[in-house]
Amino acid sequence: MHVEKITDTDRFLDFRIQWNQLLSTRKTKPLPLTHEWMSAWWKSFGSNRKLHICCVYEDDRLLAIAPFFKGKTTYRGVPVTTLSLMANGHSPYCDVIFDSTLDSETTSKIMDLLVTINTENIMVFAKIPETSQTYSYLVSKPHVHGHRYGVKDSLVTPIIKINSNWDEYFKLRTRKFRKNINNKINKFHKEKDFIITRETIKSHSHSTLNEVVEISKHSWKTKINNDLGANTASREFLFGLVDTFAADNSIQVWIMRKAGIPVAYEFHLVFDNVVYPLRADYHDDFRKYSPGSVLEYTALKTLFEEQEVYEYNSCADNYWYLNNWANEVRKQFSIEVFENSVKALMLHSLEFRAIPLLRVVRDKIHQH
Image 1 (tube, rainbow, N blue to C red):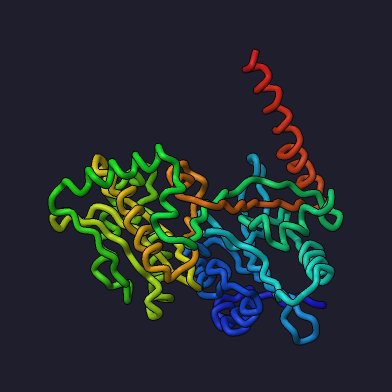
Image 2 (cartoon, rainbow, N blue to C red):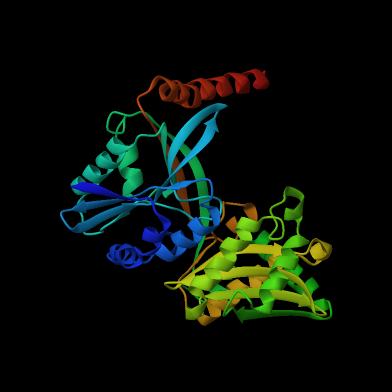
């Protein structure tokens, strides 16, 4: 068993067939692990980072891909080097990709190898699902192949399974929530000039995408410079996904307009019969009409009526408004594996021993 490293962007882009062949051994095709998603992510967020994808082989057979990059950051104020999975706030989740036919003993050997060859201060397995082989391996023992590690909560993602008709599903929501959403829908329908449409985006020059950016520029996200006007990398990533997936009619934008003025949108990427709502915003001037809630209700109702997909993956954390819709949640964690150096071990002790203890003491003081 040996590792070949991809550190050149051109080689990474040329590795699509092998990458997706490995992914095809799985029963389902997870969008965030596809070569198309990862390459779009790297093009938008790879600046100031070094590509370091680890491909594990047995002779000529590709067994696993660990989509890592190297970076430099500070950890509790201390400069460190990191080897991290290619994930950030735009990623629903991430993982090491294994040939699904491998047994647990082989996957453990692969993980041992990846940890052994690391030369950075901290390995960051970011946003890995609780159900993944990577997670199971990392948390199965007190140490990861002789290295200390720590586990941090990442996301609890609300999932909506589209496996019933709309009426049955909606009746299972709480009475309080149903009353609240029905009041919003009734108020919305009493207003004039509102139109909601679903538009299939064929290219990033589609005029609706300009409206998407304008809505975002008038949303609450402008206060934190995270709207699509200010956040260039986010906009480029979204448009990069359009360039990659639009040919398959996979990009759909639900958009609300009032008298021609764009009010709210949801940006959906439909892949392998799963809907990924990757971005949503509403114009703050129209807040009183609850445009986000109405648009989400309309999109979900249509998906249940059409029965063409089986899942709506919210791609978000367990916010109350999403939790009201969900019939399942999936947990993701970030696991940090520390090298056996004095600096790294001190940081591990600080982060996962000293600080948690201080928090307990603080909470007890506040109780009294």
